[in-house]
Amino acid sequence: MATAQDLKNKADNANPEHKEGPVARTIEEYTAKLPSDLFLWAALGSMAVSATLKIMKKDEEALFVGQWPAPFLLLGLYNKVVKVKGHEGEKEGGSRP
Image (cartoon, rainbow, N blue to C red):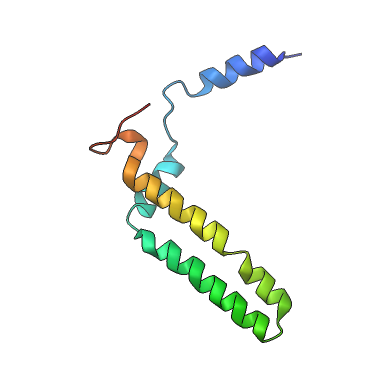
């Protein structure tokens, strides 16, 4: 049976260069091309749609759409980090820790 230390050692040695995989790299390449305002407007728009649905007494739909702003804002933060930091710090001005 593996001990906690064995599992920690395996995890530490799984990706020693701390490189992103091909899927993450591809996503970063595409999301870096999107303007950051897009995510802010999507969040604000979904709040407006949710409020409108609530006024129209469509409570379940309003709750569903009302959950969208937080993921949009998180995606916007991810987008901004990729733009500022670059892919794995490879962009000019970026640095690896």
